[in-house]
Image (cartoon, rainbow, N blue to C red; front, side):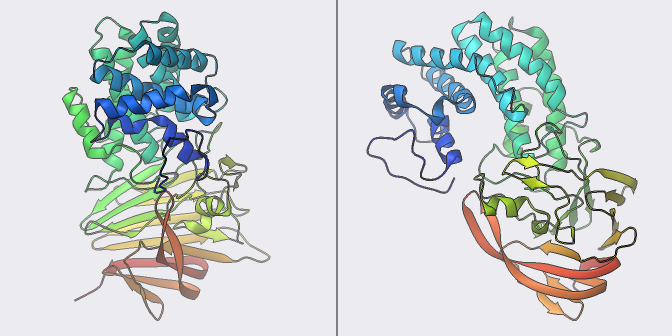
Length: 454
């Protein structure tokens, strides 16, 4: 989380860096990191046990779920049998069973289910097993889309949920007579999710950091693919369809096009107002990027990072394409339609504004063309496009074109073209200065992106 606090005695309720930091403290992920031996881990767990009666955020269902899995892994890894630790762990699972996150659903409810599965096999508890089976059977069918994507459409959360699916499959492999129908579902789900992750990831194995996503949080694509292979599950590329993402590779270009619906409809908390944005890599380096996610606190920064102006798409009359608000809420949503597509071209439009925004992306030989059109007549309109570069790229303006990262961006039908700085979210709580393009345009507008000659 890039925020450090030195404790003489750990304050498990420490809230100075926000709720997500406190959650992470209570996850106990550190039990499984390099350098944490049996004695250090036990000392931390016993310290937590002593403060059990005063816990606050740590008793909530989500951190309870994550911590339960980590404790069970650590205790099993080191063959530790301790009645006091088993007692608090069992008590946590009983409380979790009575406080499942049906009000949030999404990855939270899945995490509850995965943790109950671990608890069920660790304690040989039929109540935990029955609920784990019910949650996972229903939610995996609900939350994993037909093309293998996790429904929250964040590659980071997809990695997190895939890791849990693989762990659960591994767990049942080693408990051969436990829940055979769930074992079969986990196998099918893992193969789809591995395929989607392999397809959506860049050539170097990193993910597009789109919607709520940041580096250093989830297991990476390559370790997950290797984990799958160790379990006999080999990924095959999926055809991206119902998730709405489209991935294109042409020569030195890698492009991600976002024609995603706002999902899940009942809990789109990790969604950004980024409809029809484009991410671009050239010769293996980021060129056009999402501005990232640095915080989950309900602040102006959080609102800005979710807003349309922070993405590589078009803003009409200074409004968001979807009404993001309250940190994790979405009001009116942009409805997306894909009008035409083939191997190297897509035309899509959305209806988040009073008039449809139509964008066409075409990959030609050594060239990318982006066409934007706002359909219908306006009494008054302000059409602004935005393109964001990562730190380390310094763009240069030459007339109606921009040179950056070895590429030339050439604009037609624009009224103004400006360069300005913005704050790029490198990781949670880590912001860096970077450059962006803002262009005011008439409709239709065209951008041609090609390598700089010479």
